[in-house]
Amino acid sequence: MYDQTHQYGPEKYICFKLSKVMRKLQRYYESNLASFEITPVQFYVLSALWENDGMKFKELARSMNMDGSTLTGILDRMERGGFVERRDDPEDRRSLLVFLTHKAKEHGAAMIELAEKLDMEIKEQFSPADFETFLKVLDELIDTDMVSYHQSF
Image 1: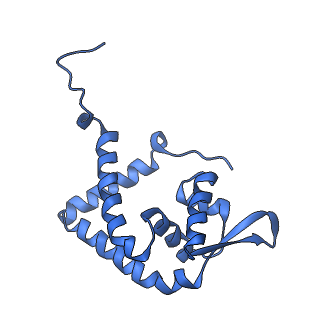
Image 2 (image 1 turned 30 degrees about the horizontal axis):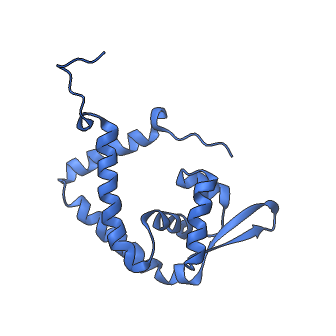
Image 3 (image 1 turned 30 degrees about the vertical axis):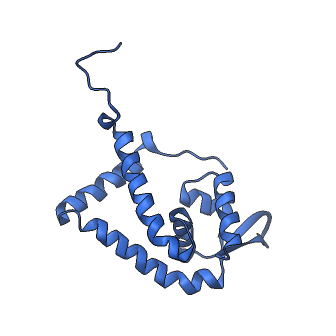
């Protein structure tokens, strides 16, 4: 039931605020990563592979919190851009492994340096205590079952 005394605008809702922040961050990272011809989500995939090159496709999807079809599209574009390659898993014919290319390895340090600079610029908008609280709240939201992403592979 509609109540005229209740505020209904989108600004009231947590999901709207988080979405608005995410869109702003997305544009910020897109404009800065464009020089490498990658998107923020492609950078996140590269980051996972810099940690563990040759990951199984399903493991990468899980670590990225994505379904397989979404990751497939991202990897298709990254393969065309020369950043990754998919290979059959010699231990499991049903599985694919995802590897960094020479190009991704060659530009990795510069991309990481840029991302760390961008993170620092965001961090500087907060006091150290507020930033720690902000990260803690984000981690708690990520860990909350209510906002968890349940994926079956």
